[in-house]
Image 1 (cartoon, one colour):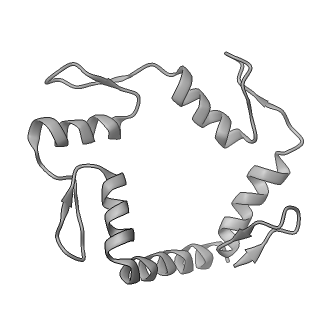
Image 2: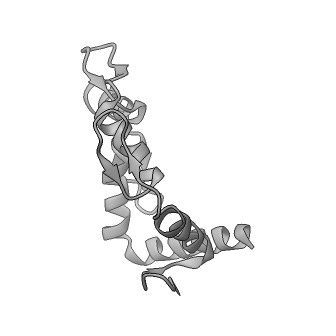
Image 3: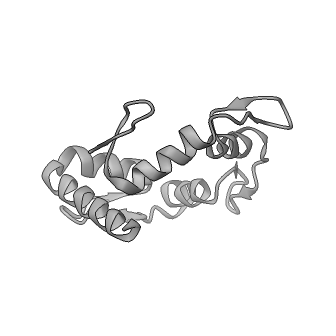
Length: 132
């Protein structure tokens, strides 16, 4: 764990600290205001998320039922869950299947706690190594 000298937030690894510094402290003196509605965001990343979430139209349409989605992954998960019934994600620890990444993530984190921690630590080591 690394502690931010500006705000005291604890972060895992140098990579996460660099991202935190850029988003929360280097950009902090700028106003990140949406030119469409005036919404203020704490940083440029949050502003982009706001614009996509609030101001982008539903760009992806389901060919089977016409339902529209803002993100392609939402359309893909919708089709898998309702139309094809083909799972998108398979747990590498127990072979349970899921049609949404959120459910897959939640399953691994709650049902395979030790394995989950090991994967997370390995990922963090790789990210830290690539920053150095």
